[in-house]
Length: 352
Image (cartoon, rainbow, N blue to C red; front, top):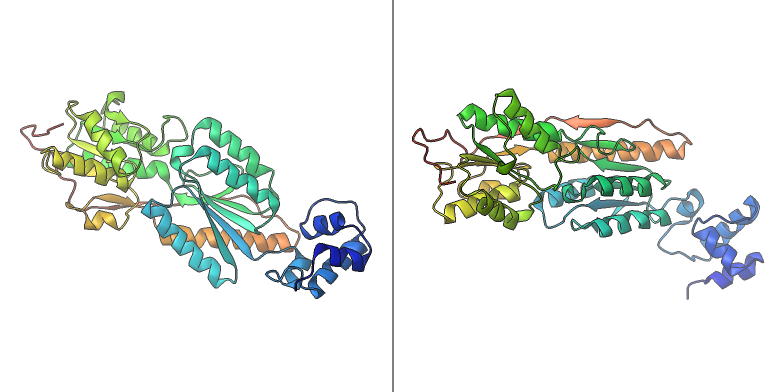
C-alpha cells in the first residue's frame, strides 16, 4: 500500500496541507530544512511512484507538453510525431494537448501549465485563433508561467515577440506561392485564408499582397475568402468565388487547396486547365490527390529538430540558474511544383 500525505505529515511532524504544498511546488512559509525533509520522506516512502526521488529534489517531472492547434490536420500530426520522437530520445515523455481551433480551449491548456506538471512546453498555435484579442490574452497567460516555452511560429517574433519562436517564414510562404502563379501568367488570383483577420496575425495574406504589388496587380478584397478551415472550408471558398473571373487560387493550407480543387472539379472547372490551385504545408495528401497539388513546403523535420533543441537548451540553462536570450528562427520555405498549377488559357477559359 502506498504512503499517504498523512503518513508523511506524521513522520515529519507537520500538517497535511504543508506536505501537500511542498510536494506540489506551491508557495508556503516553511524552512528549507523542513522542505528537504518532506521531500526525503516522500522519496523513501515512495509517495509518488511515478516520479523518482531525484526528480523530487530537482523539481523536474521529465514531461514536456506539446500543445497543437488541430490534431485533425496532417501538418500538426506530422510535426507532433517528429517532435515526440526527438523528445523521447532525450529521456523525457510527451503530453499532447489539442487546441481544436478553439480559443477558450487554448487558454485553458495554457492556464494548466501554471500547475507545473511539465518541465516545459512547445506550442504550435492554431492560425484560426490568431485574432489580435486572443493573441494578447494568451501572451498574458503564458508570460506569467515560470517555465521554458517555445512557440512554433514563422513570423519572426512579430506575433509572439515575448517567446522564442521557430518556424517557416509565413509571409514568404504566401509570397512565393503567389509569385509562382504570377510567373505562370496569372493576374486574377484569389486567396483563401484560414485566419479571419487581415492584420499582422495573417502574414501569409500579406505575402500574397506583396507579390501582387510587386507585379503591379491591384489587390481585390472580393477575391479573398477569410476564415476557412479544412477541406469543407476550401469547398465553401470555391462557391464564394464563382463568378469573380479568377484564374487561380492561393490557399493558406493544403487542406483548403484540396477542398477547393475538389469543389472546382465537381463543378466542371478543370484543375489546372480552367483554374490553378496552390496550397501550403506539403502534407502527404497533396501527392495522393488528383491532380497532385502544388504546394509550399515548411520543412517540418527541420522545425522539429530546432524547436526541441532550443527548448532543451533553455531547460539546461534553467538548471544552471541562467536564462537564455529570446531568439526568432525562420526557415526558408520551398516551392514544390506538381500538377495543379499551369499557365492560364489564352482564351480566358476559367469557369470562375
